[in-house]
Length: 410
Image: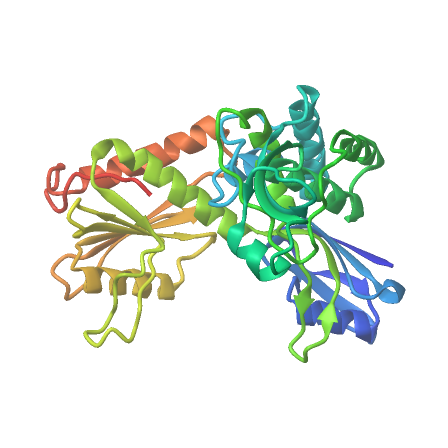
């Protein structure tokens, strides 16, 4: 097996690969790949994903490990704002001393699950439908008539069962088994993980390929929420399908950093705007560039009045370096369609930012700003709060009188 070590945003690195391995890597698009200076030598670089994965058939597997450039503790803070992952934003997550994503995430999950189960396995009521020789709960009259044709037993019933086999425990068990299969999980963490299924005896395993069951945060499952939030990330992995229809097995955990950054900025900025009133829509699809509504626009965040009139638009880009012209064109399209005078581009750790006044538009301004991802969590949240204040101050009730004071609820 070939093991490839890459860094996020790093330089091209050369590795010896067979033609079959190179074809699989190119098809899955998990890394960027180009021919090297001679046959059998290939140049590899990350493709915006971080984590670890094992790809291909057993006889020629390639293990990819991509180390994030953002420190692990900062990355975990960003992940706490993911739109689907819930649970640990307000709680310290123990990643140990690890610097790679998968070992750190596995260690954090094992510790969080251990803490959750250490207070006892959570029990809850689950609605069950089955045929029994005696009546329990409520008789399902329609099913009894259709299936039993007048016979009194067995009885089709529906009842609430107080059990350990509830969504929260199923998710923890599924994440545990998945992590035990993944490459790159240290032996010490594996030992911790192997204890968890013993604590979850009686919990049914999830059917592979089906989405995990839904769970609702509550006071009763509050001690589980950190582990459940991490488990949500663990369970996102899947197989890839090649363009020619050939399935390629991919075991691992790879995260799209642009999506992680976008989720953090949008959710955190919406929260920071909330005290000012108004509304915020994320991934707002109500707007179109043309009168015929054929060209749909989808900005990351739109700040509006309570009546729905747009006040400001924000788009998030996980980029560094020079500003691509297409980003500016995109923001100008947003301003034109929504009749706004100002738009905001939020970048990740950009070294230089600018404010562009667009000619021939009567003063439309596109403001670039950047967040320093190397800052501690408090500093990062402070940067988002400052951006929210700037957006509000730039409104018509602010110093320059060009917008309105409002804020958000996502």
